[in-house]
Amino acid sequence: MAVRIKRVYDEPGPDDGQRILVDRLWPRGISKEKAALDDWMKDIAPTPALRKWFDHRPERWVEFRKRYCEELRENPAVEALRERVAAGTVTLLYGSRDRQYNHAAVLADFLAKPTQRFSVDCKNLVVKPQ
Image (cartoon, rainbow, N blue to C red):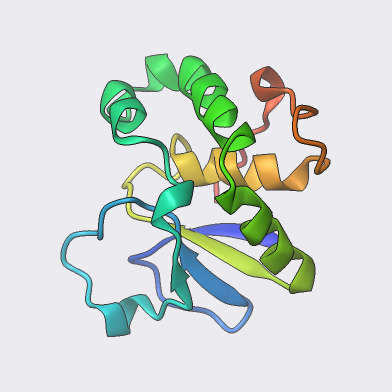
């Protein structure tokens, strides 16, 4: 049971397990074949309003993590993803160029926390560059 994150543009690897795109929008310039997806979970991505507000600006990172975490607490797609993680390795794919400040890092950390709905401390999520 491992959760990994990877840019969708990176080559698929033998240790990826299930490859799930977690962006709301399809990434530019990549075909479905090259992405080698097992699934595309659009509904687990940040809302369009939050994504636009964040705009990949590092100075907004702490507040973005908090807001996205709050969205995840209420998102029914989280439980479906947790079930997949419990079954084996899952690689969360994202399109952002930024390997550190992206929503997949928040989502991976969120999934690593206990499953109680309101137990995750969004302020103390750890970001591990991949």
